[in-house]
Length: 151
Image (cartoon, rainbow, N blue to C red; front, side, top):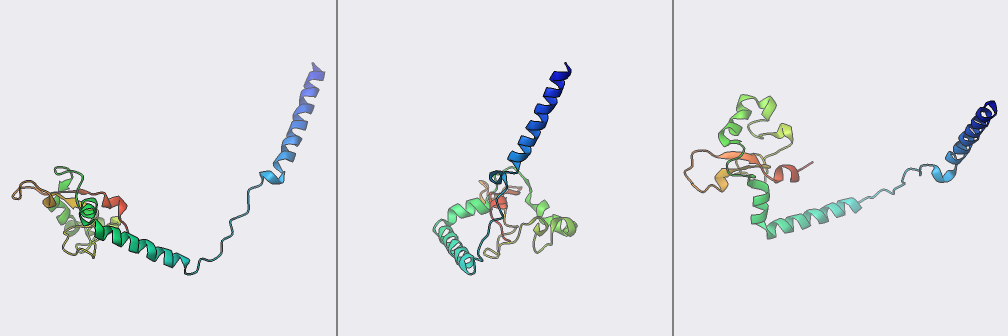
């Protein structure tokens, strides 16, 4: 029994040394940090190209963009629009300023459409209501709440 125990310990030590030797092999080392050359004006040119392509797409499909940016997910879901308009007046520290509703949450008034009554990313049912004289307009997030942004 003692021989088996010694043999087991010897095999364990040899295995341990073999594992350490393999672990120190160069092929198992993490690669060095990637080296990149400064991009210079390349990124600015690429950014301009992308912005022009985006503007061209939006100008070709304005109705699709309006649905994406301005229309809520449903016509009876969300909060009553009047409540969302009152929140900045009642608690501007929580809801953002009256001039820029929900700026504290990253939403913003889109300067391209100064007549739009709420922050970009919210849609309201006043845009697509069946009954033009309906009693309640609802506001809810639109696709643009997550997919339109600015940095």
